[in-house]
Length: 528
Image (cartoon, rainbow, N blue to C red; front, side, top):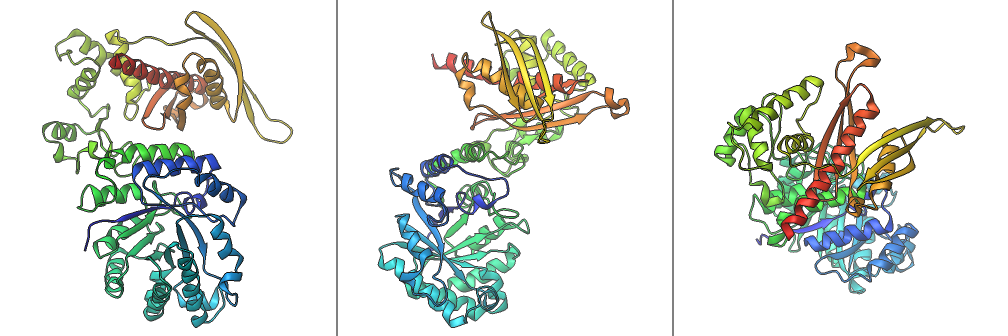
């Protein structure tokens, strides 16, 4: 059996059903182009007959010259008692003009008789007729056997008969769906192995994550003969989500000898995941395998020492294989050598005996005593190091800001920010509204800076955390604010501390922007 595994991304269809996800047409087109550049085999983008947005998307997508990806439209079998050529849903799928059509049908006899309320034989005809209709139109047809595993456990013969009906209609691939997400990997492996032996056309796997096992179930299916895997690139989807393709691709393509992407594309897995998260306006899970910000982060001194001596002692792969990077977290358990390593990232010539090393260690301890915590906020710590080494410059200077909060008659709370900053010796003043004071402050600052530093247009906040440090001081307590930012490729976190939550947020916000500007300046110097 070959080692090629077709990757089928449903972020634009199944993923769009996730709570909090709402794609514009432009969003969907950009994600399609990203996945195509990445070498993903199929992208499923919706049903052109279900809403005007999908219809517009397919019309625009036809104008894109895809280099690798096949675009797919999704819909159901014909309705019971209706000829396939007379079914409105079937006809609407032709409007997409895609090379691939995905048809889903019922494989669980319970659903046939109790949900769509038809006979078992009519359901098989519905599957067979619909697949054959699209094959006659010259389409590649993928059949999604909805609730297959529940159906198989209840009535294995009928579940297989539903697949056989699709095969008789000419289906190019039969996809077994764990629609409720409740099947265990051991069950998946046994069932897939049996079903693979019954057909001479490729079988696929479509897993949901309701038991937290969608990735494991997908891998189990491949190890038992499936050669097509469906999911969403960063795992979002209805309820608990779909199988996370970034994890599956890395597991199969980096740790096993399966061909999921072009060889050069595995190093782009993290970048693609972050781009999709940014476009989708969701925070990438920091603890996601391979692509999360914590995936290759080390905190304990023993772990850090081990990785420095032999990376494989505490890392299961080289982070660079998936476009990640190793991170050593600065904390109370890191040790002096950890801090020295961080200093050397800025200036490799510094040694442990240099006076500046002691100054930085003392400053770190002072700031930790004030309430700062640099674990997970290495960007602020790098700025501290730069200031002590004389390798820092301020890109703007705050003159003053004012926050106005109000609750209008409609009951929705909002904020406005007025800000005055000095950039390149020029005073600039502007105002902006936001959902809250930090949002308003962020927007106002950007309005000033974007004209000076247009590169910041791609930067936005992805997470905001506030923690009260000494709660016994009640409303006079210090607060620690952590801000996570991204430019769609990199993620960085900064920290601010104050008894005033707005000032703490401002300190973290300034660090976030200045960190990015310093990195851009370094890139320009290296390019000369």
